[in-house]
Length: 153
Image 1 (cartoon, rainbow, N blue to C red):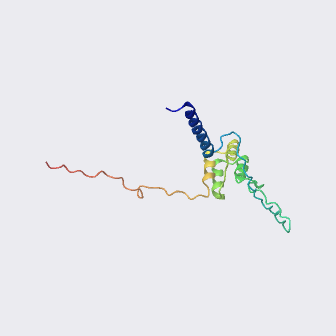
Image 2 (image 1 turned 60 degrees about the horizontal axis):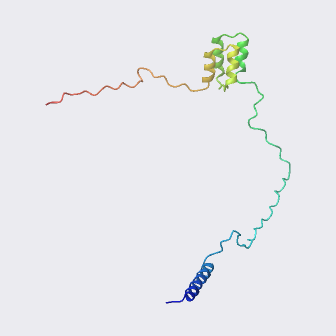
Image 3 (image 1 turned 60 degrees about the vertical axis):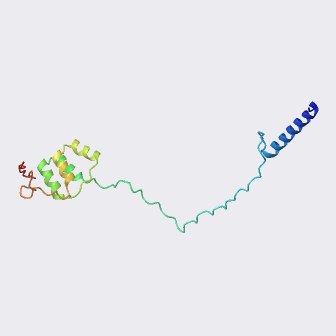
């Protein structure tokens, strides 16, 4: 039988060998981080300022600036205020033959002045090519159902 002293020495030696192998094989398990070597920070070359223009350049005008010219519907509005009838206004719109670009506020001004819907519609349709009218001679023939023949049994 072995003596308890020998058994104790063997177990101590085994524990010591196990502790030593674990310490060498695994990384540190502490909460303090390992010191790292600082990486060099890249240096950015300063960019030179842009060159100054030889002469001063004026600011271009804002594209969305409304024109100071009279609106396109001003002639129709003046004629209505002068007492022109609907037929006279329709004739004026047809004679001018120019496009009227009417916005919602423009339409409201025309209606408030008493311009009829027919005149406003004529203004919106002016300077546009009319669609061809379909007549009975140019209309396509209606499709007729195919004749069915009784099947022989």
